[in-house]
Image 1 (tube, rainbow, N blue to C red):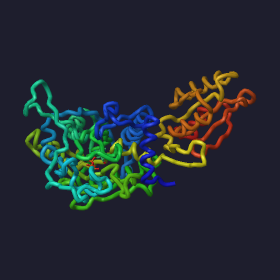
Image 2 (cartoon, rainbow, N blue to C red):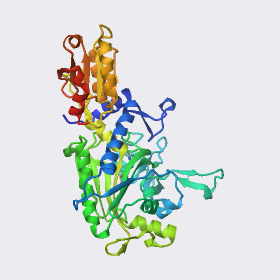
Image 3 (cartoon, rainbow, N blue to C red):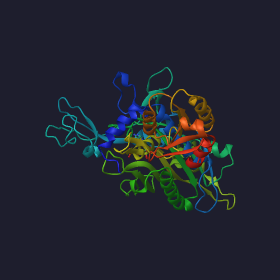
Image 4 (cartoon, rainbow, N blue to C red):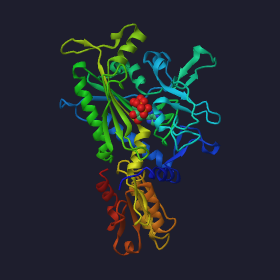
Amino acid sequence: MSVEKKDMEKIVALCRRRGFIFGSSEIYGGIGGFWDYGPLGVELKRNIKDAWWEDMVRNPPIGPDGKEFQMVGVDCSIIMNPKVWEASGHVGGFSDPMVDCKTDGCKGRFREDQLCESPCPLKPSKMAGDFEKCALTEAREFNLMFQTHVGALQDNSSVAYLRPETAQGIFANFKNVMDSTRVRIPFGIAQIGKAFRNEINPRNFTFRSREFEQMEIEFFCHPDESKMWYEFWREVRIKWYESLGIRSDKLRPREQGEEELAHYSDACTDIEYLFPFSEETQELEGVAHRGSFDLNAHGKASKGKETAFAVVDPATNERFVPHVIEPSAGVDRFTLAAITEAYSFDENRASPEFMKFHPRLAPIKAAVFPLVGKDGMPDIAEPIYRDIKKRIPCQYDTKQSIGKRYARMDEAGTPFCFTIDGQTKEDGTVTVRNRDDASQDRIDKSRCLEFLQDQLGL
Ligand code: ATP
């Protein structure tokens, strides 16, 4: 069953009802482009970040040359010296073309390149510019960086920016990392963290937010090998999404055309996903070949020399500025993709809506229920729950009917539930209920943890 456009509303409602995602500061009417993750959402997002860190940083894939390579992590500050953003080109050029509508009662602001996807605030059935009353201005450049001031003085000398990407913290620390570790080219530096962009039109739930998280790798390699590493990372990143349950027919690697490429970029592939809110696939991650642009720019701006961050190949004594391949993924976009991919509806089930999360991503992996809160059932159930909980996120629930408890776990995407019932007392077996087909089986009560580890591959 494929998820349709109309399902987006159901997905947003489920996210809110079950505590995946809430609007930020909702009690005051919210604030456009900012979101809060609730108890289930925060676990899902953490599982995504943990999976990325585990698979890319702690245990990265083998390189295209059949050899292991090194990958290390950093966690840089959000506010950096503003010179970073001058050197990177963000102060001068990190902008989108914005148009205003001058019509009374509208005052809408839109990205010029996204007019055909932006409904007119006065007549939402038409797109901005298509309604006869629309009076759009010429486009002007709008810088997306949020500004703030550092220190007590609020003048031009104290202006600073909230980082619009995590990448620059990595470039600014390139030398620190090389000097403080034994990494040698080719190697990667990874970071997960918040980024901020004052998007003109935040929309499509969390897809385009003003505060979001990124998972970025800057991979440094010899210029002659950069094409090989670019192709390698593109492949690795697509397979990673597939390994976490994203169906390949919904993923599309889209190579950017010459006219789309940033001026410093040699090549870029957007890994796109077919979200239910659009007929077109939308970017989940960009894998960019950035050449030596960033290291050159920071070398020149901070040390006066483009080649300040050159490295020496110990085998050949060749001195070169490494090239960079950047797989840059959005945590929130993948969280939304994982939610839409998991969303399932089957009207023949007692609980029609259920979330088929990949076992690694499921916020809760198992639940334990005593069928009733008496007859010694809780005494059997509690130790089983405690045993599982030490290793695997598990919940214990005694409230409401067993059907309602299964339904709640289905909506949370919990793969297995164990129920302790009358038969448990007779033969020591418990009911195992499978989320995906609602089937039930019996296993010995001593095997619950082992069963989970086996079935979930954890
Ligand atoms: P878009 O074209 O959608 O604005 P981008 O090409 O500007 O995205 P990048 O600068 O390549 O995005 O950022 C890398 C990743 O960060 C994106 O692939 C996306 O997953 C995430 N990202 C970027 N902007 C946002 C945003 N406003 N909200 C949520 N995630 C974002």
